[in-house]
Amino acid sequence: MATVVASSLFAGAAFAQETNTALEEGTEQLSTLSEVDSGTCGDNLKWVLDDEGTLTISGSGAMDDYDGDAPWFSNRNQIKSVIIESGVTNIGSAAFAQCSNLTSVTIPDSVTSIGNQAFYECSSLTSVEIPGSVTSIGGYVFSSCSSLSSIQVAEDNEVYDSRDNCNAIIETESNVLVEGCKNTVIPDSVTSIGGLAFSGRSNLTSIEIPDSVTSIGGAAFSDCSGLTSINIPNSITSIGGYVFLRCSSLTSIEIPDSVTSIGDQAFCRCSSLTSINIPNSVTSIGGDAFGACANLTSITYAGSECEFIKNVTVGLNLLGSVTFNYAKGSGHTAVTDKALAATVFKAGKTAGKHCSVCGKTITAQKTVKKLTATIKLSATKKTIKKKKSFTLTISKLANGDSVKSVKSSNKKIVKVKKTKTNKYKITGVKKGKAKVTVTLKSGKKATCTITVK
Image (cartoon, rainbow, N blue to C red):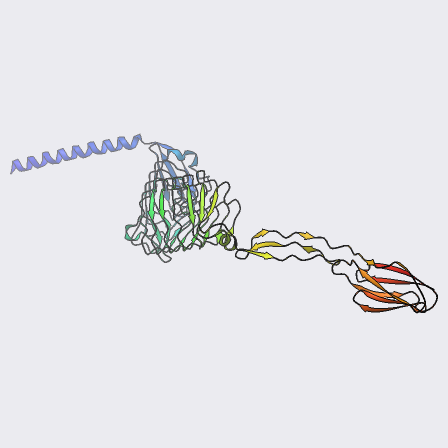
């Protein structure tokens, strides 16, 4: 019995010694940590950054929103981990933006919202876990987090989820994927990819989009510099603005026949694209949709040039120096635009041609000035005997003109009677002189002096 007790006491003493040694080592280790900077970040919140790069937020209530002016911003390159303690209710806008060496963050169950751009350009952040308490996530929260490879939402979250271990944040009610990463597998229950959802994920090389997705938000894959290929399903009807902006490794992309519009700068600065095909379902192409694609040499439209001109609305600076081809040819179905003769009252037009399909002018009609009024009489002076007659003929009238009146200045000496078009019988009545004046509808006049003997 004594032996057992002695052994027990010896063991207890040994354990106590080990424990004291461990505590001393822990105390010594803690004592080596020193505060680099500290301050407040909300009415009841304080922050401390230690010399190992751990930023701790503690207290209760809301964190302030920032715009590149977070109190630890000047020390942002020293921050390696962020610990948000229980009691903090939100993560402020741009709170940890551009903390390029941040690798991990701890978000407690007390946080209910994450502000816009909260982790923007945290290029070393590899994973994040969203607790069940979070009910609001702002825009661009993880934009340009180029190393992000794991995203998980707690199963008890009622607003967001990471269904099927998809490595993404999905808004449960709307089925919109709001944030993705390198290892995201988009579930076939997702109906939309939100704006900037994958923006700046330079480690993303390829991704499959299921047929359930009907829309892709603006800049969804912008600055995915490692993306080499992507499958766009037939369910997509619109490629939004800036969707593939600066995807510099994207070598090819197939646009399905379901797409009707391509937004502004959708493929701008995709420097590895060499060619692209546009289906004839497309009716709108935004400005600079293919701008500054340094190696893009040709774009082929599935229809004819006529169909393109007629059906597609084109923004500014679409092509630059890129050759545009038409799968169904560039010829037109020409029809003649009839010439319109000029008259003394109205200008005319020469004959021309236009395409009956797209309306493009092939040969432009030229304007012909309206004509100058002219007239010629068969006689301007005439001597006749009393009761004798002669025919006065009117000719050389310009197109559109006609005789308005032919009158004698003295009907007792000379009478005028129309016999045919532009022909008048002039009869001497008694001796004397009289003038016969011809007036045209254009106002042009001519006279013939008649002497009756």
